[in-house]
Picture 1 (cartoon, rainbow, N blue to C red):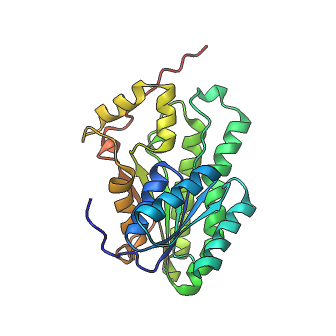
Picture 2 (cartoon, rainbow, N blue to C red):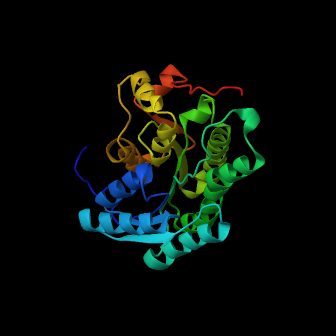
Length: 268
């Protein structure tokens, strides 16, 4: 991992689900590059601990905002906090996720799908709607939405997750097209990294971690800060000004192999 270059100096970023995993890695990398960061996290002890850790380890301006992204009012409040504390929102990273576990499609419930869509689609949608007026007014904005190879390749057992993430990719492309005239670009990262959600799935299926690494052309899963955070910094920077509506597979080449794992899901 290269040293900080100040690529995000003075920028204000919101990272949802930044209490752990990929979100924390991105928040840490943003701080190292000079951004002011709002950690929007629904787990209060985790969010506060992460904010304190980053402030101590990295320094800079970091704030924690208790945010359940399935609640529109809390999402809007997080954006307003960033505006009130730092004056604007330059960068929005929609990373938060709270999953329902593995299960066959015919057994998924309405409640599971509703939860997945509220967290994985509506939450980012509300955040983008709230942040866009600020970005439009200043003629500059970056939206980075964290999606998944699961949805792209229709991995089994995670219908609710897949549907939410693919809906978010469509939202990203549509917003990219509509907001391009205002200097606001929107892109997707599909990572293969040891995210918090992945770690929880691996607890249900221990072979998942080894299988995913074995199928990766690089033989490993990515590091949230060094591998995913670095690409997020690029997408949040001035260097990405002519890149919008794209999906970047930051996965060590996993997408080349297609479906990289298939947990056993018996019919009965």
